[in-house]
Amino acid sequence: MRRYFAIAFFIFAVIFIWSTLTLWSADAPAKRGQLLKINKELDKRTVIKKSLIPGSGNGLFAAVKIKKGEVIGHLGGRLLEEFPQGNHYVGALIECAQKAAHPYKYLDSKDNGANVSRINFAPSKINGVDTNFQNAGIKRLCKHPYFEFVALKDIAAGEEIWSSYGPNYDYERFMRIPEVREFFCGLIKTDCRGKYTYEH
Image (cartoon, rainbow, N blue to C red; front, side, top):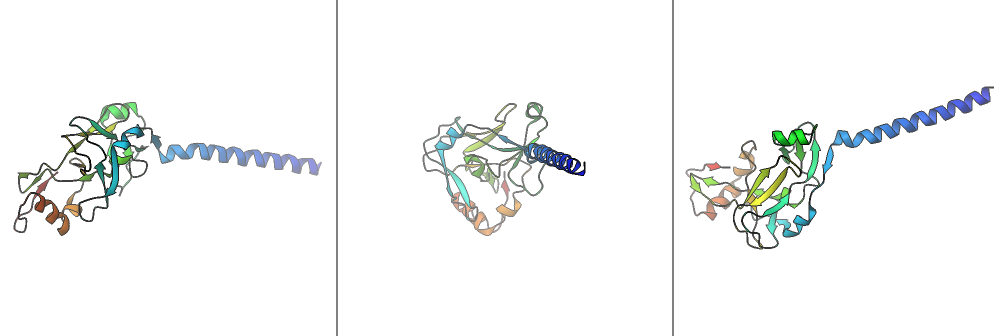
């Protein structure tokens, strides 16, 4: 009798552990967020390599000529329900998109973000003067893929792609680096030693 009880208990234990692990593994992706499917074919239009901006790591360059108004690429990544603190690769879905993507509200493009996630920032103005640096703009969409980058003007093959990250991004740490300031001010031939202001 004890032998049958031990066998029955063993079988029960195996079933319980297996079902628990199955439920945990099924729930894990939801906690990590949902991977957003995007059109990876658009990545063939660009290439990631070392940015021209000092200290900014990799940047994005046009591999082919991209005409004004054309889509450069879709911003991929992982959809999240909560904002991950300390992550600078996160975009908030527009309100109409949050309804379509419920319960997700944010897109973390740090990993699996497609090529456009490596577009660097360049200021729109320095000391009140238009720079014309930005050749790409981000569009937030109400439906999938939720974010896309569009050419604001013709972009030549080999040209680095620069954009704005919007009004809520903290640009100070990057823009106050002396080498970055000198790089951008040098491009528009402006002396920023006495005065240095910028706009996103």
